[in-house]
Length: 270
Image 1 (cartoon, rainbow, N blue to C red):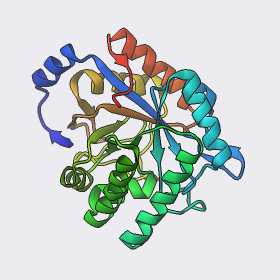
Image 2 (image 1 turned 180 degrees about the vertical axis):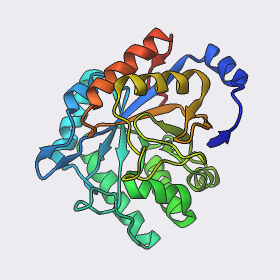
Image 3 (image 1 turned 120 degrees about the vertical axis):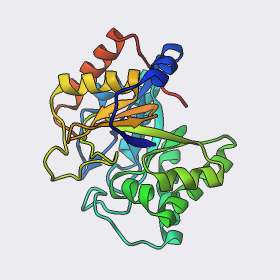
Image 4 (image 1 turned 30 degrees about the horizontal axis):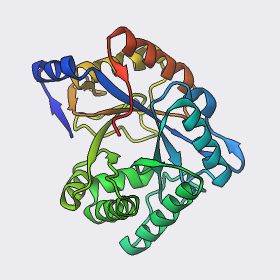
């Protein structure tokens, strides 16, 4: 959960991190569009600890999924499913009005495609517009969580949901599905803890040094500075970099270097 704070007292978070100096670093990968990659997946797999792999809804195809599975195995990276609204034209960033039953069917198909590619799915993170809708709309959140619960039942083990937003957290709690908070390294924050909408000033960060310092602060104090200068608190266990950002590889390397210098281990929690 993200909570806006006026002060800077981080005693509790510092105590927690002294005993658990680790954080996950994830990136959205496998996002092939019309046969063309949107990210340098090979370079990103060498740096991240978790990869949220596109399942075909907004990007990706079976070949890309198999390639991601192979890269993950070679690098010891955990694979998460990154399903979305069925919106390849809009890269999953268009808010679609879909009945919960149909949405569950879409998600089941995407998760099934990723599993068929050989993925050992360790978590599920919705993509784009679905991510934001699940965080704020109870019906969407319930549909997402129900499909994650169905996947967990098939696998015979818990499958966490990775995300942001009270509705998704509540739906996961109601269904007994583990929920992990996420924070974004390359996106701007509003004072209420939500992300600055794409297209608005401050929505995207591009400076690797700034992103690396943000990662250290998040990992060691649980704080991130919003666009108005206020401080937002988070219990995030995973930090996200978008693989399709032009500076993604440079930022990821800078983040790993800065976290190591701060004594924070990068590893997957699932």
